[in-house]
Structures are given as structure tokens and as C-alpha cells.
Length: 508
Image (cartoon, rainbow, N blue to C red):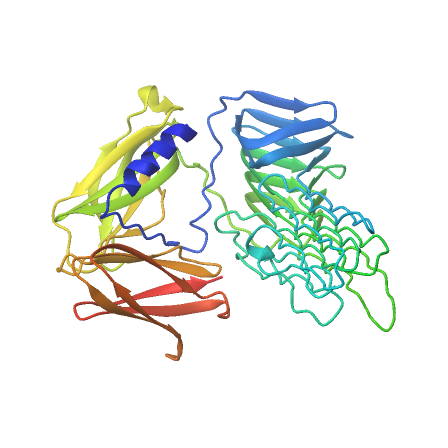
């Protein structure tokens, strides 16, 4: 399947007229409750062991009391179960701890992340009296959190900014994401410490992983049960008077079921920063602590009286009819005067048809086409490809989204929205990703050489960023760096001698 998707992506990228713009349609639209098709049968953990990260389709999932199941590998753990999920033991995807530095020998190694968690940054080592920086942790919350000038690393950010090292150092990792855990991010690694003069700085802890469990029946976490996605701890400086590694941020837990009974423990805590020796008059850097992660639990009935660290940040009801299909990709492109929308699905269960909808304003959608499921006998596990063309798109914005209808006539939103923009002069362009954690890419196709003015304004109309682009004919991509802007909503204006286009973006 990976090879197929890679070939599909390469084919799409060869088309010079490709434009894709992704949007969140509603507050919780980015997460789709999906109980799978049960193709992996019953899973019952009776002894402690491991489970490789990936997507599973069980009929039932159980962990017995006293059993610990560790997630391995880099892929998030996504469990879909048609029947009950019962956890009496422990399921965990904790970030690995950073190792401590060894004086006169080496710096500490960053902890290894599992289930999507980012690795910790490495501590540095040098014989020089001039300090050497550590390395950043991996992930959106690991940007610029390395230790410098003998300091410890900054904690991995996520729900909050990671804690900086204990000296005057603004190196805590940035926050990202939202309480709805849109996009299903995992935790980020803590920064590695800085060293000099034969001191081995500590490595940063890895970020906690991502665990998703969707059940079509009951989800029970008993008093002896727990799910943990904690960040790893940072390593120390080994007593050598330099910087400790920082803790990784906690990861993400999303649970969804028709009925939830949770009296156990859910943990997504940040790791602790590594120790550092103190040698007056210099104060070297203990590593910063990692941020907490996020927990979301969705259900229609039940109770959540367990211990949650941090507290559950978001809850909504689930559909009594989960999505009948899994959408792998939903993309659009322009060729001449025609818009074409492609999508790829898998795991179609009791699926009737797709409804491709169209709008000029992203609010008032009308059906553009209805496409019957290609699944055989309403149950198909392989990749299925679909395409619909709009022969009469409008000038300006052309928005598309996808609905699914099952055999019981239940209709649910199944995709993000695509915007294919036309200016009538063969110039086409878009901004992505949206929302963004720091960099927005401006993709364009210009029919002639042009100068483009890019302005970013806050919601009070104040200009916060401006960029002039001189582009040649053909495809063009430029970065718009909003990393230093506060979290919020902004208006991006794209103007040249032929186009005046505006788009709202969100900085997370």
C-alpha cells in the first residue's frame, strides 16, 4: 500500500497545475470515529509484552490485570474494534529517557520515541573550553530547544511551552495543536544540553506517543488499568558541570466509544529535565521539564471517574453509525477549464455512495456528483480510487468536500475541504498547511513573470508580516514564516497586477 501511495503522490506532483488547500470544516471534523471491519479478529493480552505501532481492526481487544503492553516502532497505535475494548492492565507508549553524559568521554544520547513521539536531542561533547550547543528535540515542540552556552536543553513543548533550562535561557519548546487534538499529533523531544571543557551534556527525553482507541461498543478501563504516553526524562551532565538534557513532552490519547466506563489512569505527562552540577560562580543548566500532552475522550453514555494527568481536555458524542470507509487521500487539481477531484479509500464497510459537494463560499454546499461504492459485497479492504470532474468551475474560489452515505442512508462528512482558485488569467495558487505551527507554503503557477506582494495582518487589521516575491513563469513555491507570530487567526493577502486574493489562516 505504501508503494502504491508513493507512486500516486509522484504522479500527482508531476502535474504542474496541482493545487491543494486543506481546511478544518468544523471544530471536531478532523477526527473521524472509525471502528474498522474486524479483519484482525480478537486480541487478548494475557502476558506482558509488546505491540507494534500501526492500525488494527479487531473484533475485541482485552488486556488482563497485571499485564503491561508496550508499543514499539515509530507508527502511532490506532486500535479500531467493532466490539468491546477492556483494559485491566497497562498500555503504554512512553518516550525513552535521554542518557547521561560521561565526563571526558561523550555526551548523552537523546531518548528514542515510539508511536509517533519525537526523539530527544543529543547532548554535546567537546574538549574545547568554548561551549558547543546540544541538538534540538524532534517534533513541532522541539524547535530551537537545544542547550547553548553551557545550558541545559529546553523541555519539549506541546499543550504548553516546554520549561526552559534553569538559567537565563528562553529555550523551552513551543506549544502546538489544540484541545480537540486535530491532526492527531504526538509529543516532542526535549533538547540536548550544551557542553564544553570535556563535560558530557545530557541527552533529551523523547516525546510521548499517540494512542487512539475507537470501539463500536463498550470501552472499559478498570481501576487497575491505565494508558500512558508520558515524555521521557532528560539525562544528566554526569557531574561534569555543563547542561542536562530536557524532558520530552507528553503525548496524545484519544478514546471514543458508544459507552465509556473509565475508573483507571490516563497519563500524558512531560518528562523531567536532567540534573547538572553546580559550580559557583557559574550556574550550569539543569534541563527543562517537558510540557504535558493532551487527552480526549468521546462517548454517548458512561462515566470518566478515573485519574487523568492532564485532565481530559475535550469531549463530544460519537456517531452511533461510525464512518463506513477510511479516506486515505482527498485531492484536487486543475487542467485547463476543468477541476478534477480524486480520492482514495479503504476499509469500505456497508458503504452505499459518496456525495461530492461544491461551494463558491465554503459555507453553502450543493451536491456536485454521487458516486456508488466500488466495494464488492459492501465490504472491501484494499485501496479504491475515485475521480469526479467539474466541467464548469467558477472564477475565484471553488470549494469541494466529500460526504459518505452508508446502506442505512446515514450521511457523514468524510474529508477536509479543497479550494481550487482561478483568476481568469491562468494564474493559480494556494496556501498550506492550514492550520500551521510555523511555516505556511505559498504554491503558485504563474503564466508570466510577476511581482507578488504577500501581506499578513492580524484580525485588527495590523500588518504583522510583508514579503515581496519576484516569480518567473511556471511553478513557484515560497515560505511564509509565521513561527514568531502569536497563536491566532490572520488574513493573508496575495496581490500582483492581476490578482487580489485573500485567505484566512490559523497559527497554532
